[in-house]
Amino acid sequence: MALRRAAFGFAFVAVVVVGYFLAMSLYKAPGQPPFIWPQPYTCPPPLPPEQATLLRVVDGDTILVEVAGQIAEIRYIGMNTPEPWQAGYEEATQFNASLLQRGPLRLYRDRFNVDHLGRWLRYVFAGDVFVNEALVRFGWAEVFWTPFDTACQTRLRTAQNEARLSRRGLWAVGK
Image (cartoon, rainbow, N blue to C red; front, side):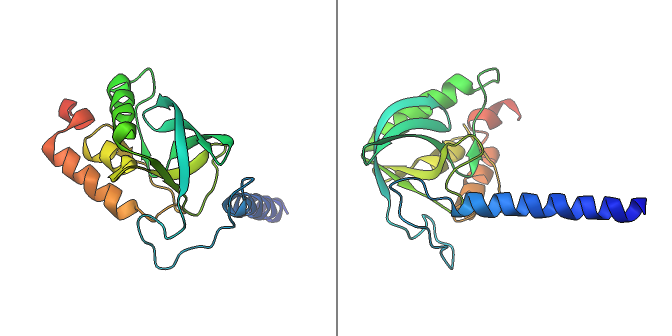
């Protein structure tokens, strides 16, 4: 009896978790086009980009922008930079700010639209620069893999291997 109850509890939790992730992947922020999952994956995904105006650099992997009259906090997909209490935070934030000055901002989404904090998840391009990849390639971010947002995963992993082998940024101190 106890084993059957435990199995039911596990199945219930699994259904809730899968339902949550499915709902988050299909969520459409106001003013955003409906999402069609690209096949095969290309980087950036083959959706029309969102044009954005930079309002503020929050840290190495988060920015505040205006998109079509709406203010949004953008979390970069596929990579993670140091937190304020970690080594490399200032450098990653400053490098991010310098990359964002390279030209007009274009944002591309993958399968998930928002994270658990309500931030929009995007690949960010400034002019010709793929900001997510540049942060990883120069060693100020490391790849953060999720099973759903994978369009640029190969490019990001290649960039991280290059940074690690060249001992750039965070990898220079033996991360």
